[in-house]
Length: 289
Image (cartoon, rainbow, N blue to C red):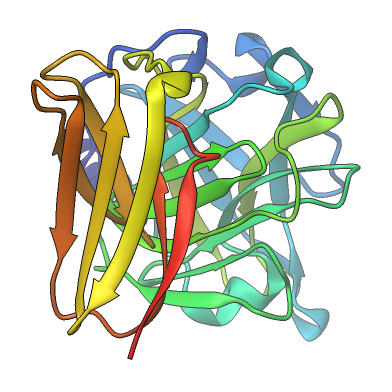
């Protein structure tokens, strides 16, 4: 039944991007170019109407071990890029009790450097972490496909989004991707059978306006009475649009004829990182009492 529900629910236009690997699930992953990692108990899999299905069954219920299938792509070609994006869309019927066994579905941007961006997806919950000891648990609507996106701005910043909403943001543990980085994704059964369907896996460098970062002469953020104000002085052309993030809350800043721009955030408390996503090395940390 899940198979037919998926065919009805999935479907999304391909965004305009540059330098992007875009697997649209019209062929098996290894035919597209992914490395299929050898597994002891590979599951049933099939293609149907632009979807890649994996049906994973439990093999040894007494020790919660089952079928699994994973695919890998090296990211050497993207080493050192200033903005790297991974975007995927998936639906699964596996329960959240499987998550601690990295099931039923997962995608990991990692490598040999020890830097990792790890997401495990169940029917109604997601676990995301860059540090295994500090996971973030996110409830999602069950029985519907969800779009996941990871934006990594080198060593300066990252954001993990679900259906366009940023749920996790912060400073990564180092530069990513590097020459030894890779993406690994797939599906697994631990204690419960499950069916997972991927709609697409896309990753690379997004197409976006190039900003003359040295033209920004001053970036200042302050908090007063619970209101954060971020201001820029620059020699950028009038009408230039910049994107400011406040721990994942984005605002568009418009540069006026004098090269200045500002954005405001109201009702703020605690510590905040205010960062210019177009030039992610430009940021300030502010504290609101």
